[in-house]
Length: 443
Image 1 (cartoon, helix red, strand yellow):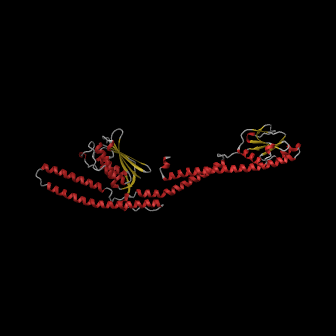
Image 2 (cartoon, rainbow, N blue to C red):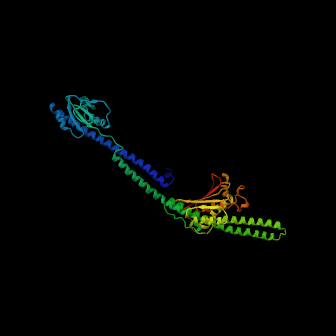
Image 3 (cartoon, rainbow, N blue to C red):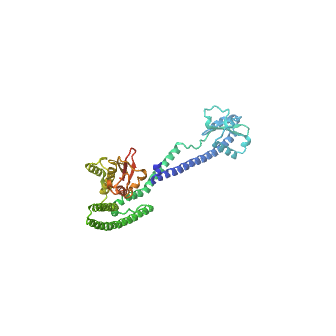
């Protein structure tokens, strides 16, 4: 049920099937019930008129010939017998058809109230093999005190489970389902196209074409809003790029002057200390500028094989004497920026090696996304800090120090790259110790 209610198409199908299906069932049932009721009233009226005519006919015949005449007039649902005493015994529950017939007889021949009109069960019926459970026995009193006894087959009430009713309902239900599927497809096709275009919109940067403003008015409105948002974001990125170029120039100039002045210091220990501080400041500025430039790259979006990237990073790490293993499929292809994705994966693997001593890489793919897990055997991170470590320049005292290198931007850059590609990076502590970084990217 949750799968149906999670999408517009599912909700449309569910509402139409339940709503129209219920209406169709109720309308079909009421129509059949009304048809049965009208047919029953029509039959009762016709039978009542026929019985009154038969009663007059039997009355006009001599008593010794009345029973033979009654037998000769039998036919259809009526079986007639003449007798001196009534064969029917009042009592038992009469069905709706019998009650209707009784009302019609009394309405057309009020004298029957005096002569006698008995609806009931068999008392002393003539020889007959009929099942009396499906018949109604009627005794009509004649003017001379004798009785015309009529065995009438009962009219069956409306049957909801009748084959014709079920076939009609099934055909209607199939029509509703087909209509629901066609309607949901027609409604959701523009939304799916819009989602696919919006998903790849930011990967191409300011060179991406605008989202097509087609479909219903609501979809066109959303597409126009996305295009306007993209235009403003591109403008902000352009302004930020120009600002970064100015900051890079303005910050490097005083650093260069400080380095030149440090060279004139005669105290070697002091000069070495100042040079280390200047190197650290310059490294922090480079790292910060590199992080801020992330997302403004002009690298083209193209199919990228993540398996090849992971194998390359793993081989380089092993050559450097690091403990890194990888178990990945032969190919893991996504659309993205090759260098950016390689940087994100290198940051995650390097973080595992630096703070966990080793890295175990695994990957898997399904129809919608690729999942890459990088695990280590380090001390892990406090659950309260699992999100905080993604903040720029955030360093944990028990897991990170300047002795390990870096400025607290590795995880930040990795998540930024993943989200720019429509994915994400999350951290979780392993059950038996260590940390697991999970990178997810849409296929």
